[in-house]
Image 1: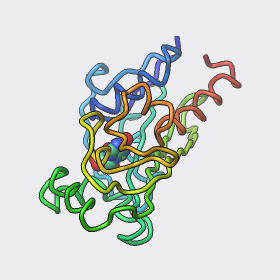
Image 2: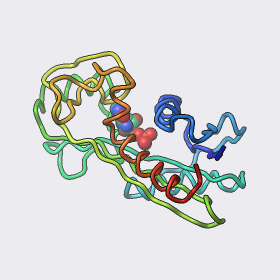
Image 3: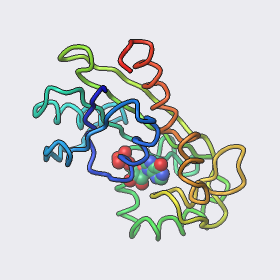
Length: 196
Ligand code: IMP
């Protein structure tokens, strides 16, 4: 089976990605691979940050390496904001829970979207780079809702839904999410190129 190292220390992401890859790829976390890196994510876009993370890991392995960078964009906060700063924005606002409360009180119903950008390096040859991007459109909720998922899930209502992502079961989130939409493109590529 195709083995890919995933350049993240975020266990939530590893679990979500593993569920989406449906046993077609053996995903090794940095911990599984015994690799310890924490590169400076100083890119200006999701793509740049995903590349920085993946490239840092290629120095320690000959296996293909994938990395994803994701974030939420809340239109009332400005174009593409907080975007690549989604994690930092929560820290600067007193933590995710506190920020989520601020968002539902100050920006209910603002249009918003999650984006996930995946970079896959060294699949077919050393130095090769492949990019896949997925989006989930939606809006900010009017209240905090649900206990599943992580991050902004309790305050984000996907288009066509009446409740937050955090009210969905993992298997429900994992067929509509930005991460899934990116992974679907990755899986299609792997299938079409006889890798899985
Ligand atoms: P990163 O890709 O680890 O840099 O993720 C950036 C931040 O975006 C995370 O810390 C979360 O706050 C947010 N985020 C990304 N994906 C999701 C998701 O699926 N649900 C909720 N928050 C997310």
